[in-house]
Amino acid sequence: DIQMTQSPSSLSASVGDRVTITCRASQSISTSLNWYQQRPGKAPKLLIYAASSLQSGVPSRFSGSGSGTDFTLTISSLQPEDFATYYCQQSYSTPRGFGQGTKVEIK
Amino acid sequence: EVQLVESGGGLVQPGGSLRLSCAASGFTFSDHYMDWVRQAPGKGLEWVGRTKNKANSYTTEYAASVKGRFTISRDDSKNSLYLQMNSLKTEDTAVYYCTRVRGGAVGWFDPWGQGTLVTVSS
Image 1 (cartoon, rainbow over the protein chains, first blue to last red):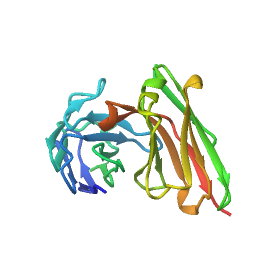
Image 2: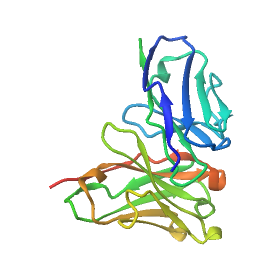
Image 3: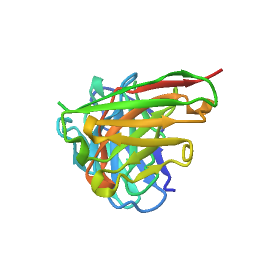
């Protein structure tokens, strides 16, 4: 199975900060990497698919990059509604596992 | 509007069974692979399994943690997805989400249903 490791597990940031979350796969997954946002008590929401494609309706302050084993999600200017937990997920092979999540909290 | 609505969750004793349903609307259900993902209380997301579409023989795939106990099925005539859960364990307690797969075999999950809570406890 492919293991997905996110870092950090949590971070504190202020509105307007640039935030970067990393995700590492235990083996190459090409660009089959997706990012989701989950607010408390809500279902996850797709942000980025295929490593770098922005889902329709998602603000352009979100961006994704990477290929192979190393990927990043960047929020260019953190907004109040961005405080949530973020998950990466590999769709390269079964089982289609998730990272453990990164909780973004208000500093 | 694309929508997924789960139902069927509840309290069940260890060793018991439960069947979850997911009603889809707003898209051509029969074209898509469909997956189940769960989230234990206070924990992260865990992929449960997948049913492919008719063009791919409705092939199913499962996580090792549920293989042999859970069965995913679909009824394209009713735009519905199902998760039959047998021999339930306390560690199966979670919110269960259904999700549409976009982008084919290496696709992504969009959208997600609101989830239904399954509690396995005596």
